Each structure stands twice: as structure tokens, then as C-alpha cells.
Figure 1 (cartoon, one colour):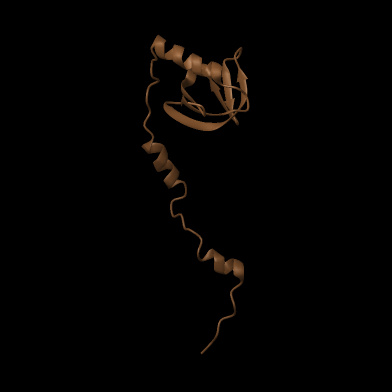
Figure 2 (spheres, rainbow, N blue to C red):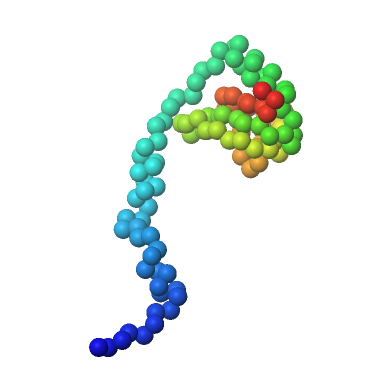
Length: 110
């Protein structure tokens, strides 16, 4: 009976790596599953309420924001790193969001 030489660690580890027969297929499926929605038209009353919430937002505070981007509503939670009323922009960590795309703001104190 012939004995094989020991397999090195790297080659042994490769045996157990996940195999993707169709590279990129899972991501393509996720993109297909995305449902594109139109931007919700807000009533003047709701816009006023949103503006009141926006006035309570401060730099370096943690907030959750729901906003519209590229046909979908996204939710991000993080520290406000920039609040520019002139440019009408809020930046949460590295995500820049136009005031016009805001749908809701949830403050820690709410």
C-alpha cells in the first residue's frame, strides 16, 4: 500500500472553502429582488413635522434616518458628522443625504 505525502495547510484549507459555481449569481439575484418604488409625496403638515425634527438634530449625536435613494427607501443609523442647512445636507458617518430625500428622522430622545 502506497502512502501519500502530507498535504500542506493551505492546500488542506482550500478543500473546505465555499465553491461558487456561478460567480456573481447571488448578487444578481438580490438586485433582481429589489422592488423599485416611487418617492412618497409628503403633505405640508408632515414636511413641517420633519423640519421640526431636523431642527433638533445636532452634530455628533446618534440618529436614525429613513431616506429615498435610487428608487428605494433606506434606513441608516449613526453619528451626525455634518449638518449643512445652506447646502440642505445631512451626513451620517459617510452617508450624505439631501434634506429633500429625507422621509423620517428618529432621535435617541424620541
